[in-house]
Length: 203
Image 1 (tube, helix red, strand yellow):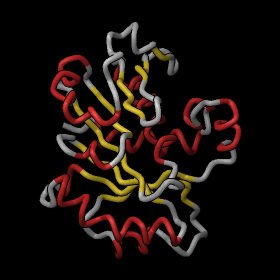
Image 2: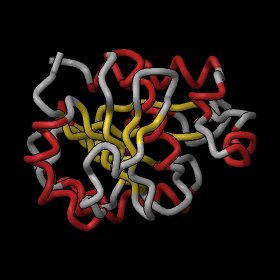
Image 3: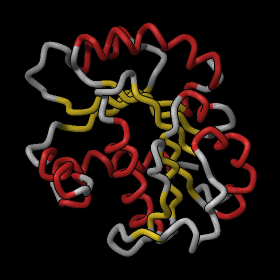
């Protein structure tokens, strides 16, 4: 298991990809699976420390992290590696630089897929085109009946490991209650996130 401060950058193809919800669920799952406190670096003031106790959170000031800001994330990675075993960075393209793993979030909408293809080469160049095992394409809100199937994504994004997160009927409930679908206990969603977390925890 990687315990030397693993930085995982999450970036969405567009604003509708659902990146923040997926990234936060990954942070909660990692905290529960490892027993470690996980730093979630979120844009728009969403940064928080996720504790391993049922997704509880710690105030940044209490954690001594009030200096953090999304645009400073790559500069603060070395210090954060020393303080946290895992950092989930949902902070935009700038967060790729210096990250150990990269999760590119897309959904099955044509607009999301087009946006992903148009930005793919730039992200690969920034992260490192040779680092095939350290990046994954996450198809969020996945519906098996959609024509944009797993073979469709494998053909159009051959340089990525593929991972899917299913659509959940509890999405609006999570948004209303300001919780994640993982926290609400959707079984299929939790199983999928746990599979993705296994990849992050790989040696």
